Image (cartoon, rainbow, N blue to C red; front, side, top):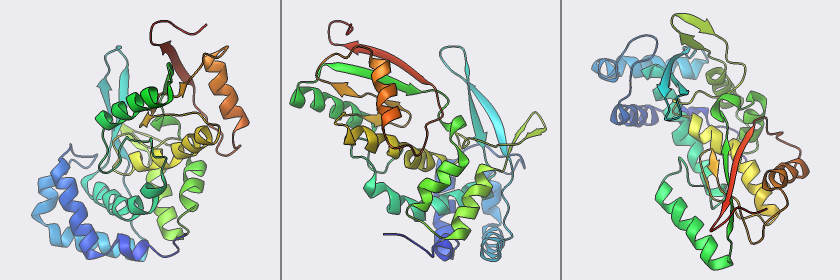
Length: 273
């Protein structure tokens, strides 16, 4: 089923009000304008009136996200993009409309950022696969800088499979191309979806579902949580990383996955040779 008219549902007053409540519950830091969630809520009626009018008339324009870098255990830093509160409200409004459309058709072994699913369930599913199918070889795969390398055109192609509302697609492109502010300097965003945006996890799942389904079509059982996945095999292969590269190369040509695979391979007792 394809959806052709959704923008009115995005900017409906009830959806915007519910979206603000979700943003308020999540708290979070201010964006580049310095406005806090509480400050936005102090004049909520006027703020939502303006937001609704801008979305309805096509004059809404998101601000660049504020770049924040979070230290990682390995010494590197994870870049996050913090949208303004009003932009988070709009992203949440989009999420409220889009998630029920896409989520039911995602791969059943995808667990990250999905309602009613958790990392504990992902671990339990992996254990069930091993016990039920006698799988003992595991390819632990991490998609390096996944959010940073998502191709904008391919994101929109993936969304357009289910949604043909040009206003919604245009709004998503605006968020993707809004840019970032780092130390007062503006940077274009020609690729990627800011990790930290409300809509980014759903975008990543839409993008990665193509990979999930390609693995499923080739009989490879996987469990994925966001950008971490663990394909499982009954027998060792000559080169596990080469096997994954071959599966991706021989799978559907769209979308071409433009990221580097960082793979570590293990089995229970010894590494496959």
